[in-house]
Every structure is written in structure tokens, then in C-alpha cells.
Length: 384
Image (cartoon, rainbow, N blue to C red; front, side, top):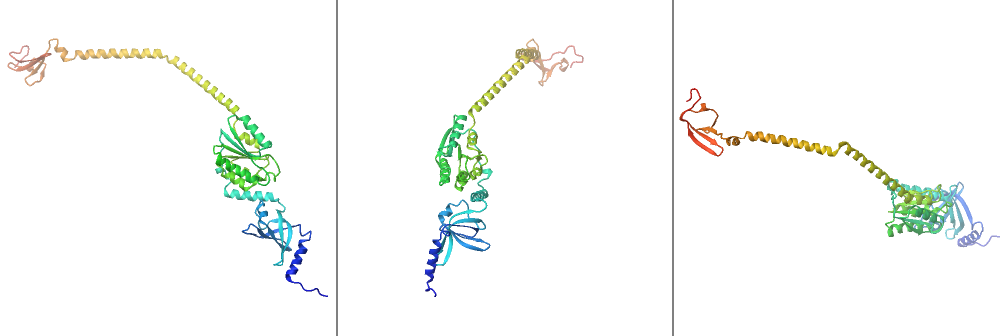
């Protein structure tokens, strides 16, 4: 005997009760390829999981999307865990996802590589924009856990190497929920409130990839990239590499290494300065000795005496020339009783033959002149 007919709504409601009370379907994990991914404006993600034989619609709520460390993309092989949900009005069902991870390669590795590629393409890791560390910092800020070996080791090394630098410790969460936001806020706050800081060190001691993950978050990488103050990333051990290491101006293998990189050893500097001073003193002494030897070779006193003798000789020669010039001075000759004879035209004449009887002449003496006429010329043949 056939059962009494039921409505579509009743049938769908019955199927929903059966499906959603089934313990297997209430907590099921499904593996398949993600496809047809749609990001809704509400933050939810709708996608399909498929294999060679079928497919199932999937729903990932917004709060789960925010906790993903990577962006879900088509073609990924994923394992989704959740429960089967029946939509009564549409008569359809879907897998409502509580957790999802990439199959094969871990989801953290996928997230790391995807973010690394994204930030690299944007130039966040560009070596040309990395800032050099100051050689003699005066203030250093450490962004790390307020307790633990990392901060203690860094403080011990910095204070033992350099007694002239101020150290500010900004305690933050370094793992778990909210750690990335905490680290990012501290870096931004230091730049804003303490712009005179010379170096920021951010990091923590070793741990698993999950424990170090805060330093692989995009928000931390961007805060490091945007920092006006040089940043040293010091996360985990030598083999641990994080996104923060790529974004930082300098990567240190460990927090201890970061402390050593950040400050010079003042004791070594003092030794170096003292050695420079000794070298300068030695060089100055050698220079003075060399100049003293040169003075001895050149004998400045003898040089000065020789110079004075040369001056005396020159003065004597000058005086001799003066005497000769004075002896040739016509005025001096006239003072001895001599005179200069000028003819009637004012021309100097030195012989008697230039004159004849009746010629007028002028005799110039040292103190004046006399107008004369010639009566007779003697001692000259054929005188006029």
C-alpha cells in the first residue's frame, strides 16, 4: 500500500533532519580540487570541490576566511572539514566548512610562498630601498616578548658591548592570535613616538613554523617596509627564514647576532682609537726628527751669515757706482772752476776753433752764467 503523499517542503525538511542528525555527515572531511571560487561582499566564500566522479558545493563563512593564511584559488587540492547542510527551499545540500587546508604541501608553506611572491612583486624586498645601519647608534628599540631568553640575551650583549646606548624594550606577543597585530603596532608606534630611535630589532627565539608564524604575516612585513627607522629582523635560529627577514633592512641569524650587529664594542673602539693616537704620535715624532736633521744639514745660522755678506758686497758695489756717477756729474766738475761754453745759438762747444773774433758766447758756471765776446783766438790755425 502506497504511503500518503507528502509535500516538497515536508520531504526536504525530512531529508534535512536525517542528514543533519547523521553523525558521519555532521563531522566529515572531504578531499578534492577547489574550483568555481566566489568571494562574496559579505566576506563568505562559495566554491565547489570536485574529483573525477562528482562535485559538491561548499560554503566557507567569513570568520573562517579571515583566519586563512593564504588565498584560496582554483586548482588547489584541499581537504575541507565540516558538516552537510540541507537548504530546504532549494532542495540542495552543501558542505559547510569549519576548517580547510591544502593537501600535500602544508597550508603554511603555501601561505608563505604566496605572500613572499606577492610582496616581492610589489618591491617590498627590494635591496635598493634597504636602509644602512648607523655605525654609532644612540638609541635602540627591541620589539619582542617581554620575558624569555631572547630579550635577556639581547640586553646582556648590548649593555656589555656598549655603555653609551639607550635601549627601549617594547614587549609584544610573538606567537598566537593577535601577535602579528601587536608586533606591527609596536613598530609603527616607535616610528611615531620615538623618531630619534636609530635601530629597531624585532624577533624572538626559536620555535616551530606555527610558533614563528606571526613574523610571516603581511601586516608585520608592511610595517617593517614602511618604517623610517632601520629594522633588524632576528627570528628563530639560523635555519629559520621568515617574511620579516626579507622585508627588513638587515636579517640577523639569531637575536644574539642582532644585538652584536646593532652596536659596536666600545672597548674595541677605545683600543682602536688608542692605537690611532699612538700611530699619530709616532708619526709626529718622526716628522720632527726629520726636520731637525734638515736644519742641521742646512745650518740656518751659516746661511744667514752668508746672506748678510752678500748684501754687504752689493752695498759696496752700489757705493762705488755712486762715486763714479758723482765724478761724472757736470755740476760737480763746474764747482772745481770749470765752465760750459755755449755759442750764440745755445749749442755747447768744446773747442776754440768753433769761435772767431767778434763771436758772442755764454759761459755757464756752477752758480750762474756770463755773456762774453771773442777778441782773439789763440793756438788755433786759421782762426776766424
